[in-house]
Amino acid sequence: MRLSDNFGRKINYLRLSVTDRCNMRCVYCMPAGGIDKLSHTEILSYEQFLLIARAAVSLGVEKIRVTGGEPLVRHGIVPFLEQLGQLTGLKQLVLTTNGVKLSGMAQALKDAGVQRLNISLDSLQPEMFSQLTRKNLLREVLNGIDAAEKIGLTYKINMVVMRGRNDQEILDFAALTKSRSCTVRFIEYMPALKQQGWRSLVVPSAEVLQQLQQHYILEPVDRGGLAGPAREFALAGAQGRIGVIDPLSGHFCRDCNRIRITASGQVRTCLFSDNEFDLQPLLKLNNVEKLALQLKELVSDKPACHALNSSGSEHSAFSMAQIGG
Image (cartoon, rainbow, N blue to C red; front, top):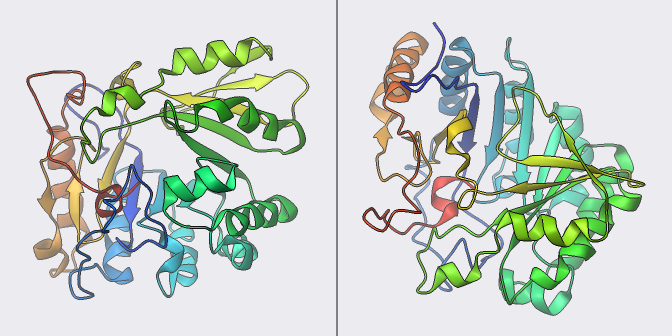
């Protein structure tokens, strides 16, 4: 029994959001006042997340990404990651973080079996960083990146490009790959919060690549079957790579291979769909086989694509911290 949808897409990638808490307030993720946090009784236990993970791996899921909120703020995250990494059949265990707590945890994460980090960083300029995150924590994030680099923990830096805000830093971010063995990925702005005039913030990936090609020779890189939606390129003379993720201009849905579980146990087969399914009643049965059957049924109804480019269809506004970034 393997996970696939009605459009022939193989689903082999599971994202687990283990908390809705975060120590930042990024402008594209949260309203200025934050969000109504889940109570501790509403958030799944690590044991419940492990049950879901076992069911998913039994269906052929080979990659699990742990997200939040900010996953490193949840107590007990390292032992949980170690247990995930021991699941038979799992090939990749990766984690998304904002990097604030990373400098003191990088070695523990590597020892627990985390194979790669995605580190969110949208500006290298202290003032702009503070504007975008509503926090003055750039030094902590840079220290975390240095810690990962020092111990050889593979990482990617994710930059959400926003016109008129940080789009002047594209070349600065690309330059990080000259001396670091990381991948820098430029992500098109996505309207989770549905701010008025959000389309004016979108910088199409083609525009990003055009700017980069004026300074670098870009060679496309084949990333394999477990890769996410990014298109990646090697840069001549650089240690690292760059990538672009284009949910709007590129409509990457045709290659979507993932499902998401929120911190409260809701299944989302598409980030920008309001359709959710609550796994909590099933989790109380503690039955991996029944969970697997439910996941298989949900994936079969996965939509062909999101409707962000359609004027006739709108998703409800949400915080990425509530869904899982």
